[in-house]
Length: 178
Image 1 (spheres, one colour):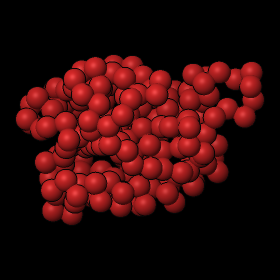
Image 2 (tube, helix red, strand yellow):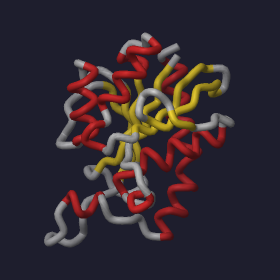
Image 3 (cartoon, helix red, strand yellow):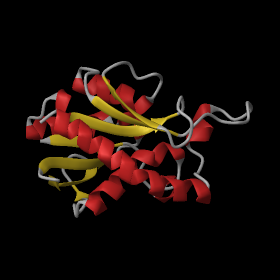
Image 4 (tube, helix red, strand yellow):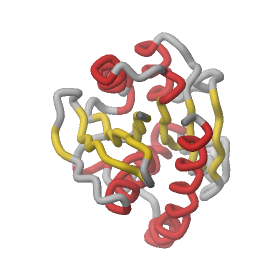
């Protein structure tokens, strides 16, 4: 079994934020595979099901980005899943918008959600899909304000186009870890 933690912030005002790309892609994957996301004891929206015959829990932590590690650790402990079977989907300012890459292990590079997960899980050795949101084009806009700003309508449409490829990347990681 894999745990797929899709990072973002809960609440209506954050729905279209750059920081919420994990939620957007997690909801897409859940819909694609017919997994219903509902409240869980992990303080997350989560649902368990099969992704092309691979068992997985898709979870959207509801603790805000900076505390994402607590629900992730609770799910890992409950299902007794090793960190190597954790896949985290998150925003990445170091990549241009729409570019996405996998990574295993490494540091948090200032990403507070990843920092929290590393701290709670006790290791950086887990899979990641980093989805590029780019950097602010205006030097007067801070990174925090930028990632909490909304995607444009055009960017949201492009995310829907990229989502199937992100799911394929997710499946590749799961297949390699089987």
